[in-house]
Image 1 (tube, one colour):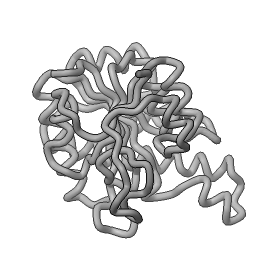
Image 2 (cartoon, one colour):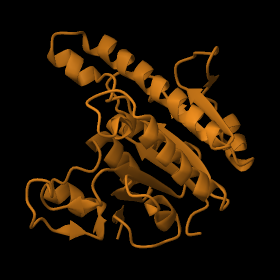
Image 3 (cartoon, helix red, strand yellow):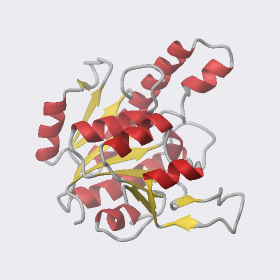
Length: 236
C-alpha cells in the first residue's frame, strides 16, 4: 500500500446519492464497503464528513439567519452524518469510533488527539464530527487540521468528479484534467479544490491532497495502492 494512515474527506452531498436531500442508505453502504476493503489491507483510516445534505450555515446566513447559529447547526448536521456512516461501517463489521469537537457524550467521544491516534493504531476507523467546533471554519479546514494532528500521510478528498480540471467538466466537455498539480499552480489558476484557509494550511504543512471520484467502486483502493486515480496536489 502507498499510504499507512489516510484522512478521507467526504462531502455531505455525497451521501444523498440520487436524492435531493438527506441520506441514501445504498450510497452509504457502498462507501462502507470501499472503506472496509482498505481497512482490511491494514490502512489506518480517519474520516471527516460534511453536513451539506442536511444544513449549510452559509446558506442559512444568506437567508437572514445569524451566521454563528447557522454554523453550529451545520456542525450538528455533520454529527448526524457521522452517526449514519458509523452505523453503516459497523454493519460491514468495521470497528469504528465517532469523535466530536463539540461535546455530545451520549453519542460520541470528545475529540482527543491521543485517543484518536490510539484508535487508529488498533485498526478502528475514526470519524471526526462537528468540524473544528468553531463557526466560520468549514469541514475542509477541519479535515486538514485533523490530518495534521494525527500525522496522516495524505488527504483523500472523495467527490463526484474524477479530479481537478481547468474548467467545470460538467459544463465543458473539453475541460482539461490535471493528474498532478502544485499548490502554487492551484492558487495561481484559481482552481477550486478546498476553501483557501484549508488549502494554505495543507500547503504550509506539506500535506498532499488527492481529489478523486469516490462514487466509482474500487477507486478508494486504487488511490491507496498508488495508482494515478484523480488529481494529486503537492509541493512539486
